[in-house]
Image (cartoon, rainbow, N blue to C red):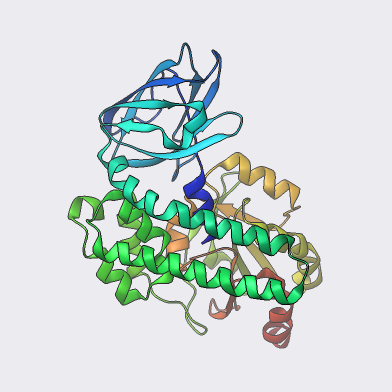
Length: 365
C-alpha cells in the first residue's frame, strides 16, 4: 500500500524533441508549454512499466516537443530535476502539456483520454494518501508506546478504508486503462474469484493491454504449495548464460526472488553468503532471481550484496513469466526446493531462511 502511495505522489518529467527507441507502435507527440523553468532545465520521462522506454532532454524558453511510439495508453513518470515529479498517462496521439513549476503535480495533459479518466480517481485518493502519510509521520516521531500503538491502529484502519474505496472504484467506475492499473495494484488484495470478476468488467482492448495480459496470466497461474513440483524455467545470468532450474536436480535449491529497490531483499542478501558457505558442501544451491527492469541497477546491487551464487533475471519486473508462474505478489519471495524438484517450503521473508533450512533441509542433507 505504501509503495502505491509513493508511486501516486511521484512526478517525472521530460521535454526535448527526440524520437523513441521503440520500433513498433503508433506515433505520439507531446508539446510542452511550461513556465517557471530556466533554460537548460533537465527533464526525464520514463515508462512506469519499462525503464528502457524513456526520454530525456532540456527545456528551451518553456517549450519543447517529444515524438515517439506507443503500443497503447501508458503510465509515465515525469520528472523535472532535481525534485519535481508526477505521473501522467500518455497515448498514441498529439498531446500538449501545460503548467508551471510551482504546481507541477497539477500539470494539464491535453488530448490524453486516459489522463482525463485518471484525474477523478487521483482527486478522490490524493487527500487520503496525504492524511495517511501524516499519520505515518506521527507514528515515527511519537515516543509514548501507548500513543504510538493507538496511532498504528488508526493508521491501519485508515489504510483499510483507502483499500476499500479503491476496490469499490474497481467494481463501480467505468472501465479504463487507469482503472486496470488500479486492479493491478490491488491484485493481491482480492480473492481469485473477485479478481476474475473485476477483470471481466473490462473491454477486450484493455484486457489485451500489457497490464491486462499480465492480470490474465496472474489469475490463471496455479497456486503453488508444499509438495508441488517446482515449475521449470530458463533465465539468463549477467554473463548472458542460460540457466535451467532442472539443471540443479540433486541439490537443495533456494529460489529467491528479489529486486534492488526492495529493502528487505537487500537485507536478506547480506545474510545469504554465510548460509551459502555453511550449506553449500551439503548440497545447497541458491538461485537469486532478479526482478529489476534495469540491467545496470541489477548488476550494481549484485556487486554491492556480494552475490557469488547463481544470479539470473529477465528485466521484466513482476511481469516476468517466471514471477507470474511462481505467483510472486510481493518481495522478497522464497521457495525451497528439494533434490527431486519438489517444493519443500515457501516464504516471504529472507529473515526466516536459516530457521527453514534447519527445520526442513538438514534432515535431508
